Length: 158
Image (cartoon, rainbow, N blue to C red; front, side, top):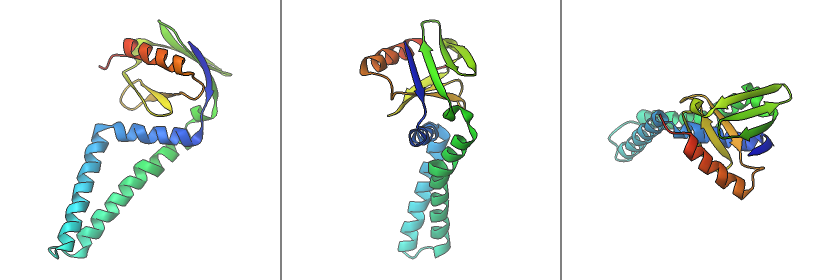
């Protein structure tokens, strides 16, 4: 199963957002900051606290959302040369081969830690921090279905 692709900046940034939100530590942090902001808003409304804790909670919430939604994805996109290349990826029973004009790399299936699917990509994880995005854009529905089955068979969460 082979497909060629390049990356669309808007879709990559959205996929990077999915990556950050999928991380358990980020989810916990977001819940805690939201609880703090809501509690500060309620206490401020009931005149139990001064405006500073409410403003601090609001500021932390805005900064957290801005960092995970805009700053981090855009920084990663700018720094990664990968998103500017054109690729051909070949999925076989033994490995995945990724190639571009500079060469190729073969990854055995056991190198992958896990995978998940977002609206525009398959996210293939080597470990909890490093991953590769495979765009679904140039794949037909049958190809996607077959690839989902292959990923499910070949990648088992560790």
